[in-house]
View 1 (cartoon, chains in turn brown, green):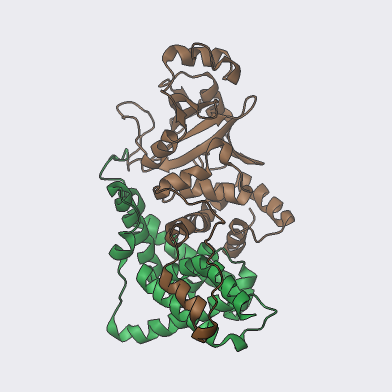
View 2 (cartoon, rainbow over the protein chains, first blue to last red):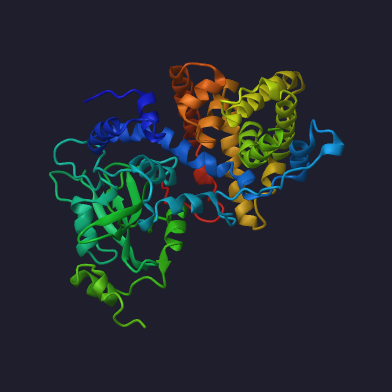
Length: 289
Length: 180
């Protein structure tokens, strides 16, 4: 396993590495959950801080400051202040919560940043929690990578992809294994996004104390593009089944879905039809409008 | 010449205010710092080398003034007033509450860092300056920028993740599926 210094990981997040270096590091990150985890401090601070301190970018500059710049050091008789320009590089944002703004980074069609920023966005939404569910986060044999990083974004893989493709909501797929430490996956909601595509929310109960929640949207063909994925604060005891566990409530995740969902969640019939159609957008409008 | 510089300064004001806000975490204090920075810059315009970036020069003046102020305030205790700054965040009560906790938590975390690290957080994470630009403003090697900055971000993140401040933001409305 390669050792990557912290400042190189940070430089990756900050876009300070060359294309070659990025490709090298992406290769390592794809297979090394520990390394991905070490990105978090840098990704979160990079993504969240400009939003937290953006008040000055959303409001007009106070007159007293404009006056200082326009008049200080000038003899009054010669004062011909230049026209006051307002700052227009960024659109004026409406009042949104931090998590709503962060969620915008990871909308299905919103993966418009380079790989480093895609990481940053996903990580930022999961601030304070782990993120990738690679079974037990141990990259050893038999561990199934549920979420993989492919060029351009995070994608459901393996059993997670299978569960999203084939399972009705609240049905559980238990990943076969030699012992009980293997995880279960459960779709918890299906809906259509404002882009017209299908999206599904899911939970993953990992071994020991790990639980994950997120949602993915159908991108093309058989791809489920992860729009949100986070480790949840799943308690301190071993919970490897969903029995007697209420559906997890993860406010940032729900806020993200609220901003994506078009209409209501799919009914069981609509869902069954979508499953049989392979979640293609073609079957979308049947029975609506 | 001077008129052109004034115009550039006016255009730069929103970002300078954001930089100052990230340093002071208080909008009034930030505007005082911006005002002092502009006055100083205009008074000492002859010290600016026209080939170089005006913005970099002003970041440098602002951070020097902030450090001076911080030193002189040390004996009088902290003056951070987050409530006042955060009160401006939004009319919606829920927005204000969430912003308060988040900005407060982050501000608190930054406040615990050494000043030279706070400056780098503001320059790189908030203002998006390159390491090279930050290094040239602060007149330190890039390696120093990187090591200070990575330490700062790890410390800040550990504080945020460790005390669960961010999840607690939502606890009044919904709960996580936490079980004991």
